[in-house]
Image (cartoon, rainbow, N blue to C red):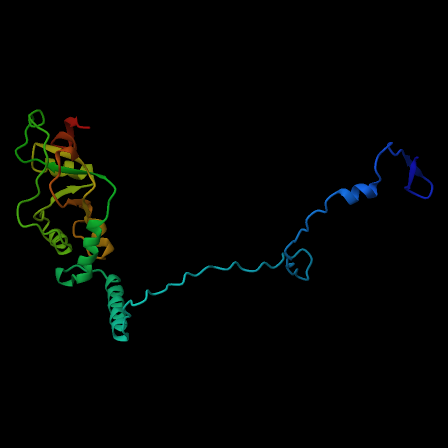
Length: 257
């Protein structure tokens, strides 16, 4: 039997009920009730009175780590805290002014230097020029070999580096190189007709400019861009040798893998 659903006072749409179809009320009774949905209450952000003004958004909370001391850990006394603060203040004041004399070296300089030595460094290319007893046939007769450090008692300390910049001589136990090829070329042919320039790839070095600048110590030979190697240079670290003549003219070169 058709049923009618009034859409308006004037129009009625007739729909045919399929034969044998259960009543809508029976279907609703048989269907399981959906589980209740709990929605968290959302607090509405207040709007400013002015139309078009952005709503106010609360600031995000920043998690602050809480440091907990281990049970039984020794606590610093007030006297020790005051002494440590005085040391830090003195260190801060010292690093604000440039130093130049070896008598101005303090124990914290050596602590910094030993930590610098222990750090792993990015491999860098270093050069060394030598014109002693070099002639036109020196490159042809060259045999790949390492470079020994300067003889003498090793002085691989911050004070040793400062002394080196004062005397401009290689300290014992180290090999003096530079990060600038042109500097090595100039050194090789200085007062020599021919000179050899060695190229190394090293990961154990002391960047003199960097070390002294970090401690605000004057470097008397900043333009040398010196890299001190605190040991012998191994044969495998020798990557090339070039022969130059007066004027920095390249004569020949050899490369190694």
